[in-house]
Length: 165
Image 1 (cartoon, rainbow, N blue to C red):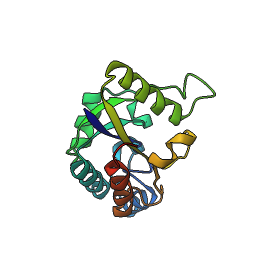
Image 2: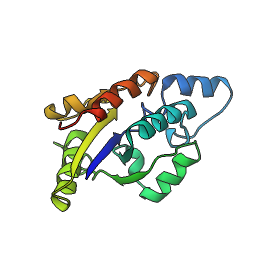
Image 3: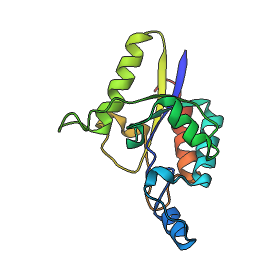
C-alpha cells in the first residue's frame, strides 16, 4: 500500500502575518495563535488533500497539549475536511540537537518498520527549514507572511504525484 502523507506545520502555513494584521484591523483580539486559522489556507490544504488522496501528520507545536482527535476537531471548526492520523514525536524539547527533520524521519522509519510492505510518499509544509538534507525534494517552504497558497498546493501536488521516490 502507498500512503501519501502531508507533514504539516500550522503557524506560518495555516495562519500568517497578513491574517493576523487583518484580524487586528478588524478588531479581533486573539490571546494566542492557537485561536487563529485562516479559512482560505484551510481551503488550500483541503484541495491538496483531496487532489492527492493524502492524510496529515502534524509536526507543529500545536500538537502539544492536544490529542489527534482534539486537534482534528479544532481544525474542522475552520473547515478542514482531511484526516489527521498522527503527530510526530517531540524531539525538539527533549534534545538540543533535534530538529523537525529528525522528528519526521523518525515517524517515517517507525511507520515503515511496522508496515514493511507499504511505501510512503510525502511532502513537508513548513515555514521553517530545519529539515534533513534528503528531505529537500519533499519540502515546500511556505512564507509565514502569506501561508499556504495555490502555488504551494501546486508544488506539493507535484511532489506527491511522483511515483517511486
